[in-house]
Each structure stands twice: as C-alpha cells, then as structure tokens.
Image (cartoon, rainbow, N blue to C red; front, side):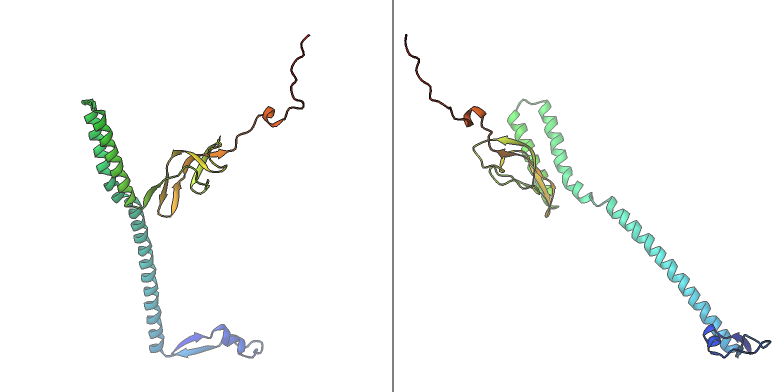
Length: 202
C-alpha cells in the first residue's frame, strides 16, 4: 500500500485535532491503482504536449500560407495586364519608324480598351461623371469652384480626371470643378441715385 495525503478540501472538513497529534492524515492506495494513476497522468501529459505542438505547427502553417497568398495575390491581375504592356511596347517601336499618326492613335486606343477590360475582370471600373450632376463628396473631389450661369450652383461643370470604383468602393474619386454663382460687381448692384440730366447750353 502507498500512503497518499488527503486534499485540502478533506482537511478543512475534518475537526481540529489536539496539539501534538498528527495534522496530516494519510490514506493508503493499492500499488496497482497507484501505478495505473501514474500511467494515466503520463499519457495525458504526453497528449497535452503533442496537442500543443500540433497547434503551434498549425499556426506556423497558417502564417506561411497567409504570407504566400498576399505575396502572389496579384499574380492573375498582372497576367491579364501583360498583353496590354506588350501592345504598348509594340506601338512605341512602330511609331519610331512610321509617320502614320492615325495608326498609332488607333493602336493605343485599342490597347487602352484591352487594359480597361482586364481591370473590369477583377471588379475595377471607371465611372463617368456627367456635366450638371450634383456634386457628391463620396464620388467627386472638387479642385476648385468655377463661376458660371450655365449650370446650377453645386453641380459639376468640368471633369479633369475619371474616377474608379473597386466593386462597391470608390478607390479614386473623380476630379471635378463645381459651379458657383457669379459675383456681381458693386456698381451693378447699386442703382443710380439720380437720373443723368443733359447739360444746358449757354
């Protein structure tokens, strides 16, 4: 038999003993049961260590996969843009030995169209701004106010740069000029006090 000390809970429930008496009460456990408990503790300790190691390895694997994903997340985007870059390089080479300006313009316009189509595959879209539409701070960025009587105050009168939207989020607002009412000159505002009279002859 192996002596085992009782837990603190069991000690508290026991009535206080006289002075000189043994304060710690021990119980005896059969050796077979003790060895079984020791083996179970060893097994659970090994399982806990193995589980902790697996969790740590999983964290490292997730971190590596995350870094790998962000490192090559734009791979497909760049694959779609490469043909447009190739076309622009060919257009520059052709322009050096040719005087056909129209062909160069057509080639660049075709390349730009392909570039825009490639971006649209990934949710990036241009959005047009119409003259006369209300200024929207979420879609427009005002460069300056322009005095005009052709458009109502607070509307777009000029577009300097197109805006871009990625899915539902504006990533670059359009650069615009906003209408402002003309400021009238002081002499136009003030009415003449007296009507002019012709000078009398001598």
